Image 1 (tube, rainbow, N blue to C red):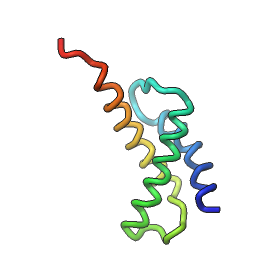
Image 2 (cartoon, rainbow, N blue to C red):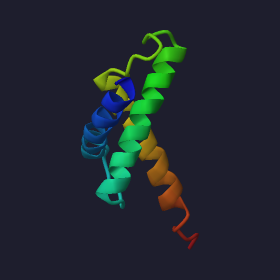
Image 3 (cartoon, rainbow, N blue to C red):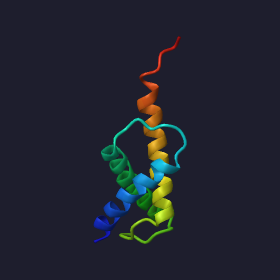
Image 4 (cartoon, rainbow, N blue to C red):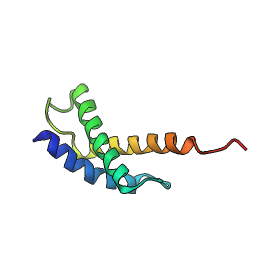
Length: 87
């Protein structure tokens, strides 16, 4: 049940993270949701590694949003950085 809850929270968190992240993200809503889910999982694992969450416990909502914002930022830099020219 923890994985399903993390996925559902991740879908919501992806939309919130995209709203909170300044600038323009050139990606569709599917990629936003996938990065939100990945951010939620990353926040859960990071929280378990730091001892903030028990094993199997999903990440907190704020932790999930922070994880998704970090992943959205990294993705926008990696995807956006490859198309810029050096002129």
